[in-house]
Image (cartoon, rainbow, N blue to C red; front, side):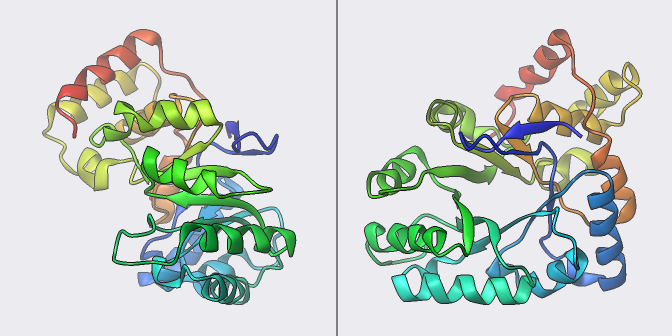
Length: 274
C-alpha cells in the first residue's frame, strides 16, 4: 500500500482507504469486504453519524487497533454541547476509545442556520484536549469555508478536507486543491470513481482510454482511474467497500505509477468533466 502524510502531522495514512455509505445493505458481505480491505492494507475506514452504520463499521473493526477510524458530525449537531454529545455517541457505536479523524460533515450553513463557527471549532478542539479525537477534519468545505474555520481555531489545525474528486468531477482543481496543498490540508476524495459512472459506462471514451492505458500496467480501468486520483499527491481516495471483488480491485490501484504521458492523456478529459 502507498502512504501519504496526514496534513502536517507527520503521521502516515494509506493513500487508499474505504468509504462505507450503505455497505451495511448486505451485512455479511459488507463485513467481509471491510475486513478484506484491512488485510489488503486499506486500513483507513470512513463513516459518519448520518450514515447510520457506525455500529456496523465498529463490528467490522472488532478488536483491531491498527485501523485509522474517521467519522463525521452532522451540521444539525454543530452547537458546542451537541458536538460533544455526537462524538460520544460515535465512540460508543464504533466501539473505540478514540476517533482518529473527526470531521464536520458539511459547511456551517449548508442546510440552514448553525451556531457560530467559533463555538463549533471550539468544541472540536475541546474533544482533542479531552483525548476523544486525535485530529480535526472537515468535509465539502470551500476555500472560503476553510479560511473561516481556520481563523477561529486556537491550538489545532484542520488536517483534512473530504470532497468529491474523480476524473469526472474535477471542480476542486480550480482553486481548492492548490489551497489545501499550500495549507497542508490532506484531500480525502470520496466517489473517486465518478459515482460509478467511470466503471458503469463501458462504452464511454473515457472507459476505453482507461482500459487501453491499463493494458500497459496489467491493471483494470477502475485501478487506473483510482491511481490517477492518488497520483496527484496529498490525496487519499476512499472508494466504497461494497463487495469483496470491488475491494480487491480497488486495493490493486496502489503500488504502481502512471507515466507522465498517460497522466496527460487522462488530464485531457478535464474539459469534459464538471
